[in-house]
Image 1: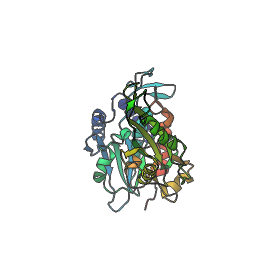
Image 2: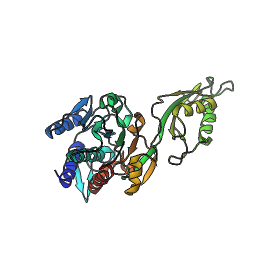
Image 3: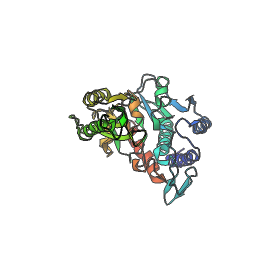
Image 4: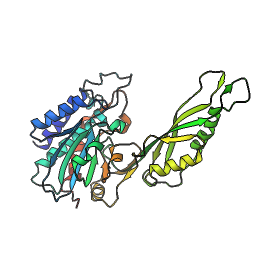
Length: 354
């Protein structure tokens, strides 16, 4: 197939994916569809749970490039005017749940894999993977197949970036905190109000600034996003729980941030996970240098992706706009897909990784 035929096929595949509900941990039907599609195209398909991947290995001695995006979506909200599972193409826009995040990247990277595979020889081996549970950073997503994929020298992670290249990404640290007080009747004065104890810690969270700032990612940010306390209006609560959402930059590990916060709060603090660390790639990496040569803008990203779960160098790039993600009447512009394929082919064609 020529490039225009591959582009049209990618758009048709995206329409099929939109019509298949694929919430996190419920991607089986979408994985079934993609597995059958790739087999019918003549590829040897590998599968583990709801993760699908194919390979084109030219030479084991060559470096390996991974093209990856995710099949899962969040659930639709209440304010859609279109059916989220019926693809509607109107005025150059394709509406549907997961069209922007990240179905467009799934099909764009597949198109690039096909086009690169059709070439006689690449300077690298190719792996394409459509994976599960990205929206929840689940352990049965890309993390579960890293050993099966083998050694990867560079990963292209498909997410809606407007075809800007994210060469750094903030990490995520979620903290569960519990402030303690002393229960008593609200009419008395002998209690210790756990809400007031929590307020002192929350005030510190609001005002504290981490010293180390990143050129690409700025400063570490914290937000208290949930709070719960009290059983009745007439009882001074002896416990108050609250949740902190922390977005870490590449100047700290999540463990370092946790230690700093724990030392300053009087509440008990527990982390849910330390595994979603920030990521960055060297500005001197060949893919970053080539991006600069062909006019791709390099940025830092505040939003989390599967970059956080891999140890090899990655960049995040794909068609669409993250502002449309997780919104009613989500859409991708058809031209964003065709342009994205062309831009990625310019970036990856004859890219020397070794």
